[in-house]
Length: 183
Image (cartoon, rainbow, N blue to C red; front, side):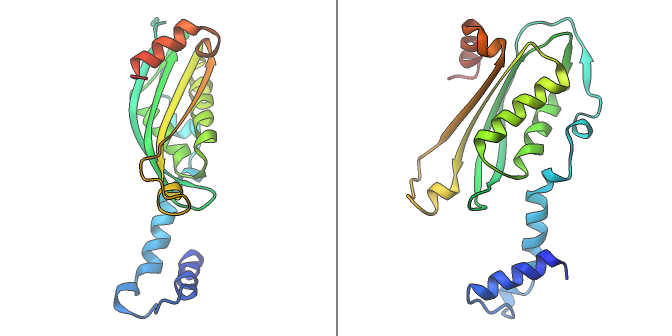
């Protein structure tokens, strides 16, 4: 039995559950496996995720990838938050393979996290691997810690944004990005 599995057994016992009842017999093992998957972002690194999928390009116009779904666990309650990420960037001689945007989002989402930090981590990562002239990242998510407990607001959504480079300094660039993602 893994240490994590043993800890889940302790949690169930601490909740007053009978860990020997049929429905809970394998729960510690399943919960440990699920948590390892949900936090697998700690095992990855940006350069392995990108896997050399940065390509030369003379395109200098905005590239937008929107609606990248993600889920993460808030670092305060370890409850899920689920949403969509929109990324735009201005290439500077290099473009990033399309699937790599989703992989970057997952790398940071699969950690105990807060949305504000994750938004910046994604923007920084796109800038680092592409050397782009600017990047914009907008994330929208519903947080179970706000829906299932505490204030219990079912229709609340959090939106965060990070604008860097031309997206921060050029209002026309920022406006184009916002229009393209429908905000």
